[in-house]
Image 1 (cartoon, rainbow, N blue to C red):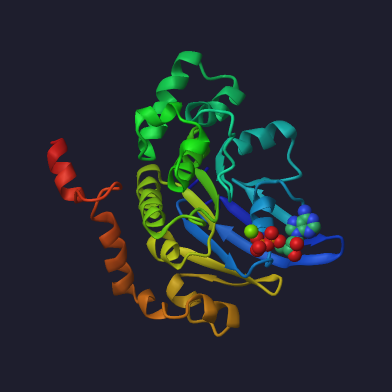
Image 2 (tube, protein in one colour):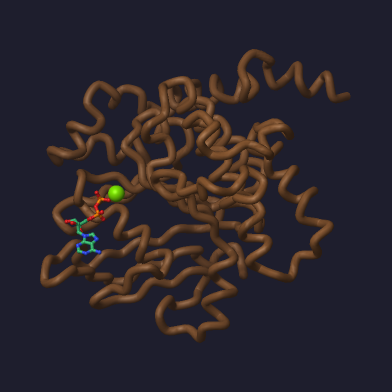
Length: 282
Ligand SMILES: Nc1ncnc2c1ncn2[C@@H]1O[C@H](COP(=O)(O)OP(=O)(O)O)[C@@H](O)[C@H]1O
Ligand SMILES: [Mg+2]
């Protein structure tokens, strides 16, 4: 796929449930390497849009293309091939409580069936490290994990097949402010390391300020606006005003850059500046 082919194309999509219209004539394009946030009031159709992008809902009209493949119209085999090119972190983490952390992360590899058994352990342990967890966490059950760890395990599972595209539904919801900040820093790092394209639903202003390139606002059945933070935060719509209340000043380019640099300054588990870590590894 060329760098200019959109990862996601939503064209004139209308969605309705039993006559109740959720989206009307949506258009949205996401380019490779972009991090896009979907914001909107409760019930505005954010999760439904995510589900449309995953092929879990079918629109009444319009088309959704992922990596150039129209969902709903491609052959089952094509659909499966596309399916393995994205990872999803659902709102509540959705880990299997009876399975260990290791088995939860290994699940997509085992389902795929073509990964040699002796590769599964190193691949799972690598992902565990990549999301900032310790080897001994592999044996734990989801019930033994903190909220932040559940998110990290879910993220490791979403990334185990090395997908270029990641969907996140409210990734920091329910986390305390510190875990939330650590998770956002992790997302920033993974995005830089893996060159991911990310679409996330979020209510969290700090998440937007930390990682997002463009924001799409869902309101009144439409995508009201889709653009950089500074542009979107100044829209005179009541939802947008309320959402960014007290934060509009932070959108200034210099402030945004400073905030983002401050996040990259320290390691995920706090303390060691990135520069020092690099010196150590020399
Ligand atoms: N499977 C479904 N059946 C019927 N109505 C649904 C279904 N999924 C979502 N809806 C309705 O669609 C609207 C948007 O829901 P949702 O996408 O979950 O909103 P958000 O994630 O923005 O809070 C809501 O009115 C919700 O009740
Ligand atoms: Mg939702």
